[in-house]
Image 1 (cartoon, rainbow, N blue to C red):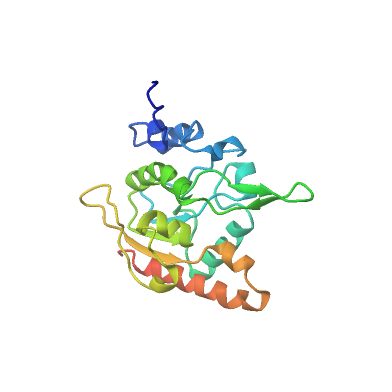
Image 2: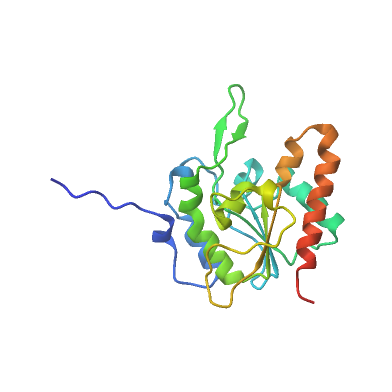
Length: 219
């Protein structure tokens, strides 16, 4: 009887390097789950090594997939607005996602691609890339944008509504000295998808959480 075929994971494509460019190139060839099959680009994180704050979202969207850059679509533009209102410059930040490929279903009519939340299996499969980014960037503060990102780093039992406004800690460390503060907030796309009459308040709450995160940075 033939032996079972070994399971391939993202960890099999992870190179032993601390160079973000090399990690991004390796992620582009990742076949650790099936999401790469329909994606246009692998969307790795963007920002400098040594960034003091890291923002982690769920996954790239339609425009991110087409351009190969994180947070450049409607949610990214709203994030830029929230950062400006919070008095935070985006340039020194490192911005990434828990999952590096766009998961979607085609619309019944037309060519529009509709976002679909990645499964827990897909999030776990992609975690080696996120943990590698955390290890290399080594931020002081991590902001989890949305429940998927928070669960990727804080465990599947995490509930966003129960822990907003708290300083949290990672469930898994990548070094003895690494113990960044973690703040969880809503994803900018949640503001966009919410009722029109509630968007102003939702944006204000996102801005408040970003200010809270920024205040945790050492002077």
